Length: 241
Ligand SMILES: NC(=O)c1ccc[n+]([C@@H]2O[C@H](COP(=O)([O-])OP(=O)(O)OC[C@H]3O[C@@H](n4cnc5c(N)ncnc54)[C@H](OP(=O)(O)O)[C@@H]3O)[C@@H](O)[C@H]2O)c1
Image 1: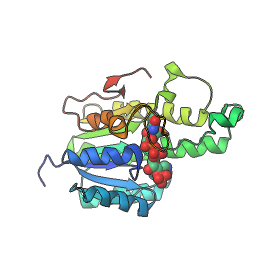
Image 2: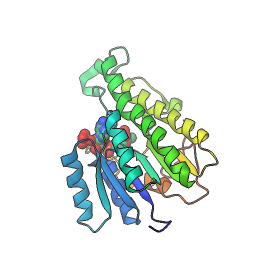
Image 3: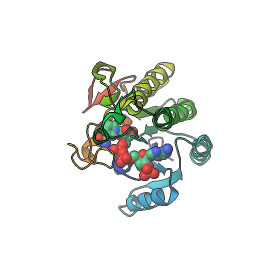
């Protein structure tokens, strides 16, 4: 395998932004591991990209299931012995919608919803960083992109949707912690707000296409040295925490 043949793994990639990130990375020549919690959906998504002539393989990965995360890590270590790009994209938005009225407020939020959201959006990515950053460090190269949101910005923090907001503020802390611990080892770790994107989560009224939403993620995932690390980006520009 040539030294430049980069391997990328994307979570929650059977649809939405994750699927588009896989498409764009594969289009740039990376060897992409598309992962999903549901094997049937993920296999079908990977096949769709392979049918376009892209180099994409599939691996099951549920970010809330530690055994599944560890299996994926074993698969990558045994098949490739390396990982160059990790995109922690999988995410859920479980807070009740505005139409459901006061249910969306922090006062009424169910702790179960907060826990479930943190498991998927924060602890899963944390575990993936724990496993894959040391593997990247062995080659002295890595790009980790964590999907965050403007809703996690402390500088813009408002009431409502507490589960999602907490999970995205916390993933930003994960970014800062790993960026610092792996500084000087060739590994760049950054958070991205993709903007308001037309997906199942964003809804049909969103401003951006998936192609636009994936742009900053792919830019950071493939950034040449020296790459920024420990930052929070939207539309390829740093934004406040
Ligand atoms: N769309 C927006 O406007 C927007 C804005 C800001 C940030 N974001 C962030 O961008 C990321 C992608 O969002 P999206 O808009 O593409 O959402 P989406 O269309 O709802 O897709 C979410 C993906 O995450 C997967 N997923 C959920 N829980 C998972 C788990 N436990 N393990 C593995 N995969 C899991 C889903 O799989 P299933 O198909 O199995 O459910 C799906 O593939 C998320 O982190 C989101 O918070 C989105």
